[in-house]
Length: 157
Image (cartoon, rainbow, N blue to C red):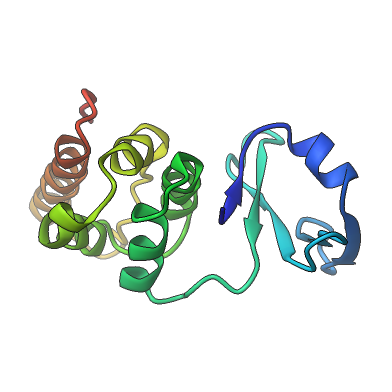
């Protein structure tokens, strides 16, 4: 298990808080029974929704996706979907990994990933002309919809 997404308050109450960053937004915990360290991760910047994410997960996208999408715990697919929705990995990289590794991954985790994946349009459009903005938007929509299709999720942007 690499993510905890249910009963967060109860889970945090079982752990010991060991650090809070200077902003107050990022809290670290340790499970005193296992010694595992966790980070309280905000999954929706418009509310107080959080999940716990195991500390020291791979930063490399391929390694992270392989770890979570081959896991026996469906929550890892869900947590990965939330995490990749907010992080700086490109949607093209996510799509390419799914497309090229689909047969190796846990199908239930892929579906739970797709359900929790909430992409944000992070294109840098400053300085682009209108036609370029439109074409990059179409590329973004196409890539995101391809991710949903691979995951078996009936959603379109």
